[in-house]
Length: 93
Image (cartoon, rainbow, N blue to C red):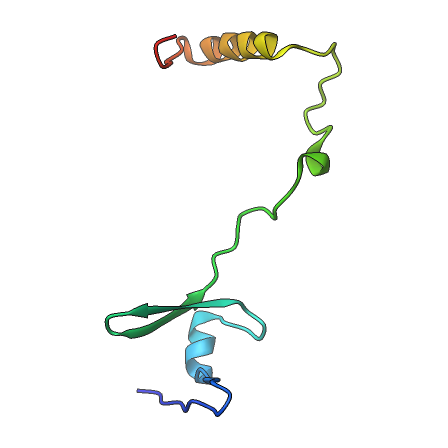
């Protein structure tokens, strides 16, 4: 079993063969979690897409018609769901 040493700065070197087996690379973010058996180290799960704001994605819809009220948008979404699925399940509506 590979062995490592804790440095005076609290750093631990993960042996190369273990890093290579997991395809861990320099600069990779890792989480450290305390578990009953000791410490669990694993890569940080990254979001599928980077965080965005509404300003980042404005214009993606390509809608060029007149502005619609929220009620009209809800009505059109409901009609599209019924066309696509043949029915619409809702919470008492």
